[in-house]
Every structure is written in C-alpha cells, then in structure tokens.
Image (tube, rainbow, N blue to C red; front, side):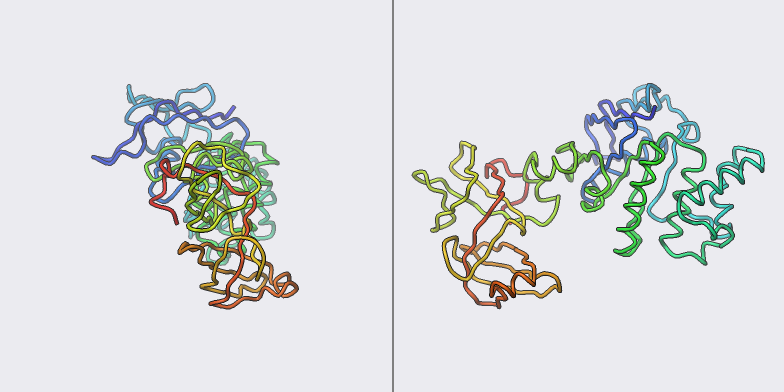
Length: 362
C-alpha cells in the first residue's frame, strides 16, 4: 500500500511561506504529477515525502503509516520509507559500472551475491539496458544514464517512486521517449509514482491525475489530464496548461463585444458579469481571408515546417493561431505580415474578469 496523504502541511524558510495548510492525497498505484512553476514548492513536497525535510506543521502518511509529524517532530528515516528516488541530475556513480550502480542499494542492504545478480539483471532488462551492464557512465548517453538511475531506484522493489524533474537534462526526442518508458514501467510494476515537473506536456502524457500549483504553492486543481485541460478551474490552470489566448469581452444588450466588434460563438457564457474574458487555444482559432468573424491583421507570420504560426491583432489585442501548412496551401491561407483576415473561435472558455488570477489579460 503506497497511498500518500498530506494533512494540513505548513512549510516556511524564514519569512518565505512555501506551503500553508496544504492537503493532498495520492492514490495507491497511480502516476500522480505535481505540476507548477519553478519555485512553487513542488520539490519541497517531494523531499518531505522522502524524509529529507520535515514539515513545520502537519502530517504525512505513506499508506497507514505516519512518516512525518511536524507537530511532534517524529519522523521515519528515508531508508525505511520503502521508496525510490530519481533526481534531475541522475546522480549516477561515475566510477561504477551500470551493474554496480543498479546493485548499490542491494549491496548496502547486504543481500547475497546470487540474489543481487539475479535482481539486477531483471532490472537491466526492464529498463532496456541489456548488453550495457559492464559499461561505465562515461560510455553512456544521457538517456541511458537516466535508465541507470531508474533501475537503481527500482531494484529494491519500492512501493513508491519519487521522480524530481528527471527528464529536464535530456533533449526533446529523448524526453518524449523516456516519458513513455516511465509510464510503461509504472503499468508493469503497478507502483505509485509521484512525479514533479513544470513541463505540462510531460504531465499530460504521464499522469493518471495532476495537481496544478500556483506560484504561492496553492493547489489550484486536481484531476485527470483530460479534466484539467478541458475543464480548467480558473484562468491560471488554463494558462499553465499550454499556449493560451485571452480576449476581454463586454456584454452589451445581449451582444458579446470585443472592442467595437461583435463576437459570435456557439457556447455563450453562463457567468453573470458585464466584463468577461474569453480564453481559447491556438487550435481554437480559425482564420480566413474574408467572411464573417472578428476582423484582424497579421502582425507576424512564421513557417514552422508542418505548421504556419500567426500572431493576429484583433482590436489591439494579440492572439496566436497555428494552421497546418498543407491546409494553408490548399485554402490560400499562406498569409504575410500586414494581411487582413477574419477570425472565428470555437471551444472557448469563459472567465469573470474580476476574478482573474493572471496579471492582466495577455
């Protein structure tokens, strides 16, 4: 059983309050990601689960076991918490082979040599390092070193894995490859994974559930990747989960007005407020050279290979859209700076401007 439960957690460093009354539960056997901007306290929570730090107040449970009590100071030592940890910088021993790096926790636990060999070779196969067990870290790629770190964390059969930004130092292709490998490992081993990152793509690809934190360490929303993406609790969540557009809208005599232009959309706002903000993704923006819609002007046109990326000025507000290059060619939508266009929106989300978390509307 590796459910993790935070109860009323407070943590400060001097006058800087990182967490104030945080409550959160990670279910047994799920891949749970803590997603938020740098400095919001994600890694602090992970270090408290691992036992490297104590909460000032509050309790942390792993399963039914109380492992940290900020009130009494009682704590279970890290090596007794039945967990594996993988850090951003791999922390692979440079003077040890792949085999010895992975075997290290078992040797510290004084397991017998036969059991160590059998278990290490099982893990070597599991993390796709077969044939490389005699190599030194200097002979490995970044992705292979990360697999060594994963293998070392898994070799003692932990019920819980803590992953602190482990893919940050990899290039884009390796990051994509490794995030799917981590998910496959989690499915095969049926262990609980607590993953910390500021990368929304990794969080959406890996997670069973995601908790999104703001800059002050407050949990804004917890839910499945689809739920938090399609039904954001507020504008902070919407903005943090990918490229976003915001336009201020006023309700006037039943009409939705963007500046001097009427906005026509299928899903009308159900918010009782005069001043609204309509939020949407670049993929929700549909442009044409003529026709109905908001009138705008191209202020930047970028060819990105598979896509055309446009910045459009609508009523002195800049919005971004992307269009498949092949489709743009077919529909005569290879536009250049200064071209006028019509803009229509789909799948929009509405917010009350007076309750926005972001600093202004961008």
